[in-house]
Image (cartoon, rainbow, N blue to C red):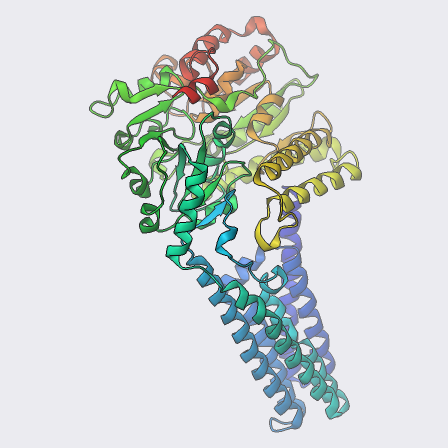
Length: 640
């Protein structure tokens, strides 16, 4: 997060320089000053380049202020024409050549962008996208090279540099050749780039008809014969929601039956994790209805969404709601789940949640299958393993409305971190918020930033600004991150186009394991961590921790599998007994109020097993929440 703040500060400085450069060009036109204009124009190009290379967050603010990339280039070009009129005259040769060059450049840029837009539109109209299925018979060609497509607006806009430089040189020397050659260079480069794009675009547009594509897909599915489908759709496509699918991937891969993943939004493929399970993404309901999966037995649904109905229409399939984590939130016992044939829950707690809702689901619809994802979690040994105990603070997000604000970050997050930092014994803190924290509530976003600032300031005070033990470790982490990114890329951009999905998945997971180990070893053992990226994963953070502090969410339910002490915020001020009765996950927890009273008791229980009065209750709760230990949950999931 420190690097993000640094990028933000750098972005503000560069933006200030960019705005001043445009003000300087305006002043130069007003006073007919060629040196001032030339210097400010050069500064504007450099500042623009730096702003985009640093991926500054101020870019979005500039766009919102009607001062986006294209507008900046147009303003600079108009100011150049103004300078031509101020120093020479509006009918001069340099003015005419500059105007002609800019018009031709604009026409060629327009043609380039229109062709790319047409290619993208036609490719999107393909009836489906796949992973892990062999559809070579369709003869679908690759998209144009990434260099021709990525950030093409920036690249084509910068083709005006030879013309701008030539015009300024002609004004300074009165030599017609500079602006002429500059104009010819600019127009030639724009025309040449369009010529290079056309053959690739023509190839990319050689597409099968919808009937041909679906016929070939059905042929591939007939050979694969899928038996279990994980079906996912979500209106607000974002990487922050894809955890609902990604958490089930390894469980699907462990099935004895043949699984397949069915997605409905094309953007979800971008955020779907690596998996050896075949994937089909079919946006249109009419095309989904034409997909044949004759041996499909079960459809699994990790979320409740309107477009689930398009799959629920298959009468020959058993439709099962599996959710994306058990918790005491209302979403874990939604009456809408009645539309499914069965609801699979981890343990008895999930069954009780649904049975408390009258007239919702029947007893026979609920099946207890455990939580197969929890197999990698380390069990509590009864003592802190490292010299410095570790507390993980993993609050949930604020929810969709203020009426059901679930997070403790707003009222208590800052107080908790200060209390942990002020504790009489050194404590390492891992802050692992829900990925959607602050996405709806500005108040939650502000509290989230304050928590991060406290941890970064304490790290800086104790270890200095640069926490990394060695530059070599940081470089190695960067190389692994790049390797994962390269392996995750598919299509024309892929450096590994011939890798099978099985081999690709295996390599990505090996790289993530290496990155996870490096992540923890790259900083001092007692340093705090703010974990907002995919690496390290939540369960890796659990294995590093001795005590969890959280809210009512599936994170707490999963942590119970470790049998380690945990604490939950009781922010409504209910009596302890009433709160535990209403929130079954809190049955074995230490309880904290809005002022963090109860924190010392939870820490002491972690440090001294004799003080851990909740230990026997955690044993009971684990079985209640997650089911019996034997047979293992993956066996029960497979059997179901």
